[in-house]
Image (cartoon, rainbow, N blue to C red):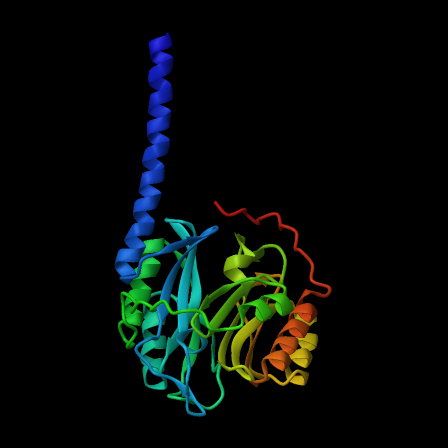
Length: 305
């Protein structure tokens, strides 16, 4: 009896290990299909799609990729039932072919917009969304990406000595982030809790993270690009804080489709003194947090697995 019990335990463990290995193999397959390695970020896997092949300038200033072309996609769920969403950066000449290829591959897009002001060349940002088997989604996206000039695997970002005033940025915004050379990047969750999309529960990290990128040109000038994710009730106060603080709102759109709560993304661009730009960002962050509520799970809502 003991021997039979031991064999049963070993079989159960083996099945669990086998299932786990199969899941890992499936996510690895997604990376191979996309030609981009995935990075686990909490409850989802992120694949970077930066446009380092395009040199983008605003008013004669070369923008860091973090400000101009930081495309990405993330996958959440299980290998046989995954949700894919993200932001792909394309040139106007690539847009039509990319949209057609997305739809032909079984994916959708929820928003198409600009993010900068007066950039050369002009860039277009396409928010992609898909549901289904992870490898099927990856194959559809791979064919769409092949219609663009996005380099895969990505061109590595060289590490540079930090010259940006990170101490001031982190202190004023009340958030810490990453820095490389003259660029500071902060990712934060201003809308608390999860987001439910057609019964699937997505974390704020994937579905509603706000991103701020700052490029310090001198002690008295910084470029700021990013987006504030907030609820519908917070939209007007967020826009007011950004514009009155000296930033330009470049796009406002719904982030997903059939999401609970509704997540609204407000994109902005700024060029000015660091103290003024940081004050505007902090005001927008405070406006996004005011009155924000954590949603309760609907009966069909599921926790991420």
